[in-house]
Image (cartoon, rainbow, N blue to C red; front, side, top):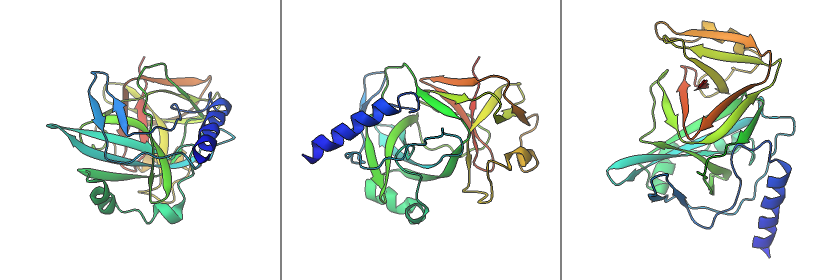
Length: 257
């Protein structure tokens, strides 16, 4: 009876927020995902029924969430799983503050664990992409339930202003008239901020991102830019998102034209 109720809850959730969710939300019975090449990676992090729901009724902008990045050895290579609390909860501080990377690393026998948050979205909306790759797993970390949302080939990258390729299929949408924040590299390629962070500067808010340029330690030839959208902007990832992080932990995705 409990399992049936959980399944009904998941189905109702998907119906209500199809246009909002970034990924397919579903409840798996095993912790397995399929790579494009056909190789199956079995994560040691256990999967579970979904029990937590927190839907941002007014859109994603400024919605609080957090992530757990877990790296495992896979043969002679590494794979990093990215878990997000998006639509599950708003990363409750009383639980998030108690999580320790080393404790989680030992618990799951991981090569590396990175706690990424709390974070807040700058994008207004998101929608699922049309790719055939799906991450189908829910897990908990210290009582904070999350879903597996993406994968990175390799260990967790820590270099600032350096591209990391994230395997996901989604579109970030920025509504007409919203203020957006961009990094422009020395090749004139643009990256738009998808989320800002509070784990470096706890006083950072969406209201003071306009002044962010004076706080960034940009590489030579890079620029920071603030502008208001004249029309809706869509930033699409079709299996690969090229992402960079600034020195305050804010994350930007390349605008691929």
